[in-house]
Length: 371
Image 1 (cartoon, rainbow, N blue to C red):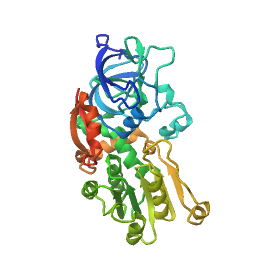
Image 2 (cartoon, one colour; image 1 turned 60 degrees about the horizontal axis):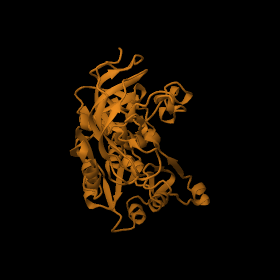
Image 3 (spheres, rainbow, N blue to C red; image 1 turned 180 degrees about the vertical axis):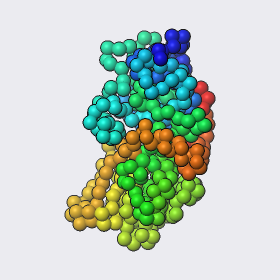
Image 4 (cartoon, helix red, strand yellow; image 1 turned 30 degrees about the horizontal axis):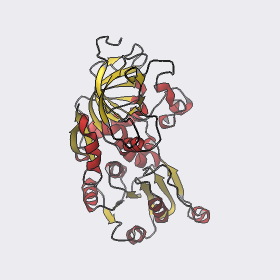
């Protein structure tokens, strides 16, 4: 199906013009789809910490349009698109996959060797521009905008019964949190799980542990409100690390240590506490990033004697074309809790306030639903 030529090129979007300057609402231009590109009328876009990290640290080119938890309705398609039609409901994934390399062909799309193939070539007109100057499109998505132009290999098809706000979270928070448990760690029935950080991604890890049949799901955080929410999501035990040494508290619950520890915070002290909590043969999974420069110390003798594993987790090791429809189906069956993740709905212009509201830990996820 050819691209629809009547599509307007002008739209509202949030632009990061300088590091730590916030998100500024501006009029920008979006190109007509070419090749395998799909134009989306954005219906929901989640506020993830990663976009705030990009907006405050020198990681991606600036100026940029960020936002990578995006769902919407297909408004137009490029001439080579085969997977989607106008009117389809879709959700974006930050996994940029070529679909053709050996890693993609083996199902490890999260390790794609040519993620750049989902972007336009250097000599092509930019997808997003302002007064003729190109803008960087965050992770190939750029969901903090009225519309998004995305390669079809970064989109998953949704059933139309799936609500957009909950669907938007599937592309990052859900596949990362639940995927770390189910795909990376391959938690089995009866295993014990520790989760550092009861934010939006950590709550999805609880859901993943429930699906896997973990016997104990122990959540550690510094905010009592978050720990209360963790219990609602299915945590069997919670630890307030401001009131007790979390390693000692964990060992009181599990004297032999835990099979799996997931760090969704990304601080040196927490990762090292996680190492100290592992049982023989246990695994520590590093998922969250507080600051890009954080490192940890490891005693090699202890690691060998305890047969400990440390693994970095990217995108929850997700094959998102498979995983996103699966999680959506589990939600529609009432088997995974996404409703309580959507704590607040805001307008596009209010994203700076939305990120500020997330700081005190009382909200799970903020989602843009008004554009």
